[in-house]
Amino acid sequence: MSNITVVRRQNALALFQDYAEKALAQGASPKGLEQAFAATLQISPSMWSQVKSSRPIGDKLARQIEATAGKPVGWLEEPRVSVVPTSAEKAFLDLALAAFRSTNARGRKALKAQLETLLQDPAQRPG
Image (cartoon, rainbow, N blue to C red):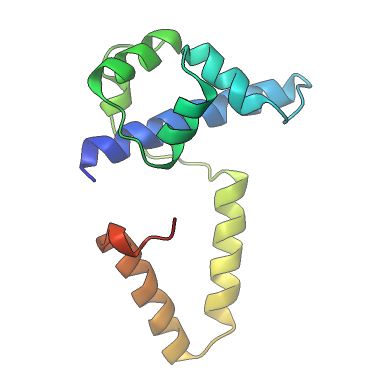
């Protein structure tokens, strides 16, 4: 996966995170948020599902997402660093820390090796 593919997906997911947080703060039900977000991007829920998981975002779709989200052209290609972890990221970090702390040096080395393998070899990723 090329870097632009990863950056575009991360930024699209950040757009959804922002959308979901605002909708939930306004009292919206979590059910149907994905479909509603897809509608705001003027894509099908199926397309959004594919984008979230593995489908690369091409130039045409990137410009459409930016336009419908009110972002300038090229916004999806700009790498961003999230300062505040999402609740899912916090849960993962808590789990990783618990796993790290509950094992010995050999187990910690194995955990680190597994994460490095996932980062280096996309074929090793589940799903």
